[in-house]
Length: 90
Image (cartoon, rainbow, N blue to C red; front, side, top):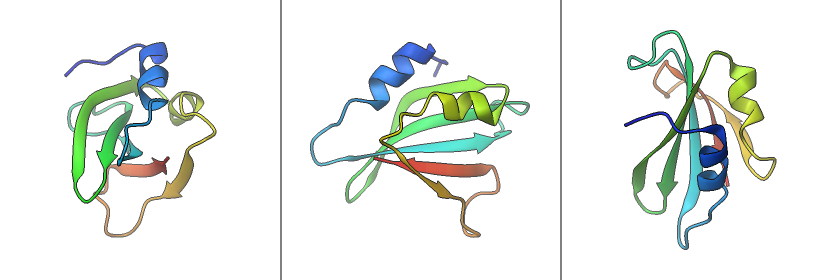
């Protein structure tokens, strides 16, 4: 997997695929980027379909600036992996 440009990320997360919900999970210091924030796109219906679409930023603010207003933010729950910071749904 490789980090994509901000423009590519915004284009990909703005595409709606029939029968799927777009879910962006924001991670704080995941193992693969221990000093960064990462936003990764998942497609969800009755199953979770991971994608290779993600961006890496130094700050949470930079990540949030890339997520369109159509997405609804959800705070992490106690059951989430500790590196999950928040999730966005569309």
